[in-house]
Amino acid sequence: MVSSQCLGNQQSLLLELKSNLIFNSTMSTKLAHWNQSVDCCSWEGVTCNGGHVIALDLTNESISSELDNSSILFSLQHLQSLSLACNDFQYSQIPSEFYKLRNLSYLNLSNAALEGQIPIAISRLTRLVILDLSINALYLENPNLNVLVQNLSRLMELYLDEVSISAQGNEWCQALSSLLPNLRVLSLSNCNLSGPIDSSLRNLQSLSIIRLNDNNFSTPVPDFFANFKNLTSLHLSNSELNGKFPEKIFQVPTLEMVDLSFNELLEGSLPEFPPNGSLRTMVLSYTKFSGTLPHSIGNLKMLSTIKLQECKFNGSIPSSMAGLTQLVYLDMSFNSLSGSLPIFSMCKN
Image 1 (tube, rainbow, N blue to C red):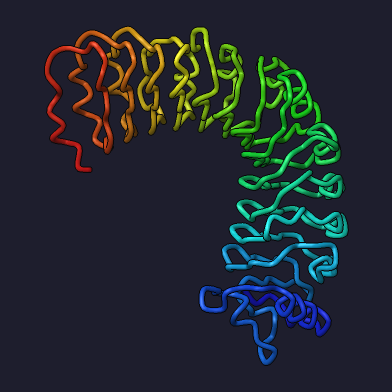
Image 2 (image 1 turned 120 degrees about the horizontal axis):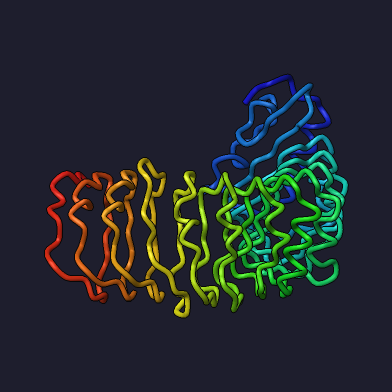
């Protein structure tokens, strides 16, 4: 993207960055084509404003270098957006020099072979709107989650999947709800989180995507999840959930995806579904969900995936399901359902 003519020092910084990185030039679609004879603002992965580099996207560039404090990267202090995702930084730690990139609103270091404690430097990036440190070998101990996010009040999307946080329910819930009022995406799967899910979480009224799967909650799902008016996606699989799942969560008008699978102590039943629901994916496999399938399941015209295997459903299969024209995947095996399957002649996929 060309937005202005590259300033000379910006071009030399980028060329020095390139020369210090080890990457596979045959697989690279960006770095390999950075050329001194071409204005750096037109280089793939580089965005400029006023001649300064404001965005750098080196996602999946086959980088296999360590990332350390000496990197020339930290001299690009006009950066507002940075992605180094899907590379191999040789299990180096996140450098403390990140604090110098104070203009960052977007930082993506996911799936980048980083390890160790997430440094306090990240908490000094107070303009961050999106932070993704997921799928590495990272942990949060000192600083803990509370300290990490204490200055990140602008954050709207937080992805810490597979970061070892090891926090009790009141700790992680209260930290998020008191410090991140604008949060829309909360993605903390496989973080060694414990329950119960604290009622303070209800304060995050902008939540749209909740991914808390693969944790150890040993608790029921709170009723207040049904009060998230913007909820589109709820991932709670394999999280040691128990008790009765609140039916009214299924009736949230914006809900498109719900996955409660592999919670073998979780009970529940399906509600009456109002017309024109948004639900596209419903995964309840390996739970104790029971009762009959309501005729109103036919109201879910957008449903493409239904996984109900190894539950305790009974009764007949509703004929209204024949009207689910978007259906791609259906598994209702190992239940006590009776009667014949509807003819899915209208399902084109």
